Image 1 (cartoon, rainbow, N blue to C red):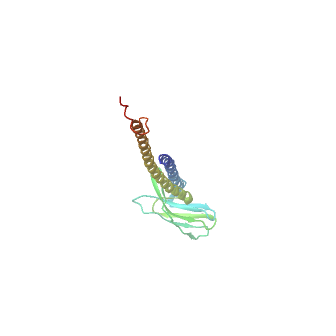
Image 2 (cartoon, rainbow, N blue to C red):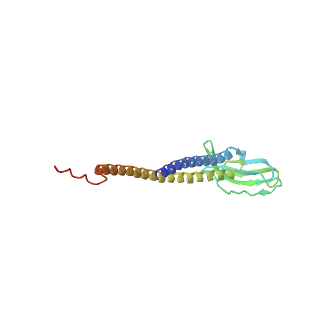
Image 3 (cartoon, helix red, strand yellow):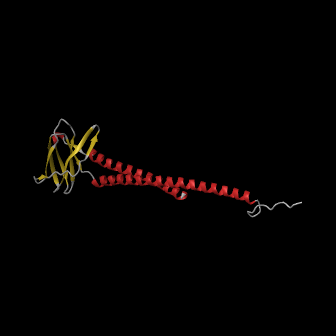
Length: 202
């Protein structure tokens, strides 16, 4: 039991450290994905911009978060003069310096060519869409790290208990064996456990 407890304790410690490392890496990757996306966004002077896109390219419009200015309302016109739909599958926020931004929506180019984006309200930027694969991998890394760290901590606790109990039993066993050996030798007296014969009478 003592040896098994020691092995379980040290194995749990390794899993705990690995889980914490995985969680930290996953969280860093998720934050970096959002930060990189917002950092690569370009300003829209006068809340208007034209972007050259290939078919299938995706772009996201961001707005500066300001409590005293209404949220941005944007429209995207494709090369053929038709309006493109803006979608917002998830909330994405980030910052550039001391200024915070949040996504208004994203669109996908249906045809190659120049796309015109116009917005009203808050100050806006336009940039590449968030890589949800990196964000998802980061989130999974955080979740896996938390579960791994929890499992490692549980194994350490169980291992420590078994280790302590095993040491106590081994110590009690050694103490008991020593006491029995001393008592047996003092009682035996070299006569096979029988009392010594009486001395011969004169």
